[in-house]
Length: 81
Image 1 (tube, one colour):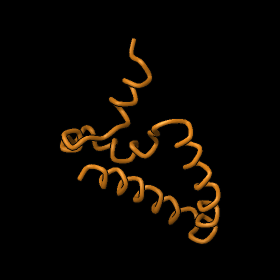
Image 2 (cartoon, one colour):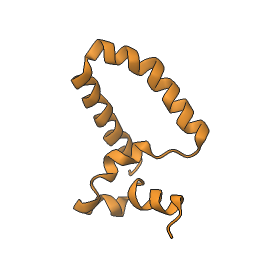
Image 3 (cartoon, rainbow, N blue to C red):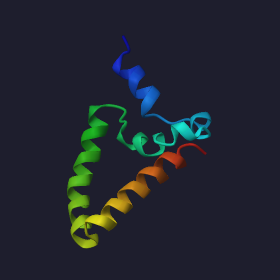
Image 4 (cartoon, one colour):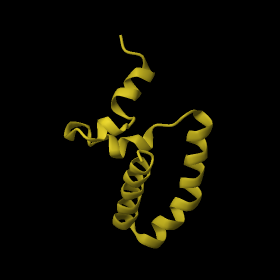
């Protein structure tokens, strides 16, 4: 049986060697849903609620989603180099 941590490391986290394989491209986006601990998750959710609701209202649904996904990919890729 696989532990939750092993599952997260295998499917959600990113490393330089993982990014070079096309079958691991999903990790570019899923890495942003992996959090160090509960406090980290709550901090992110609080900021998303406070700033995200205003941005969503200003940008609209499609542009907000594009910004969120590009930010997710950019953040994951920035940690790789």
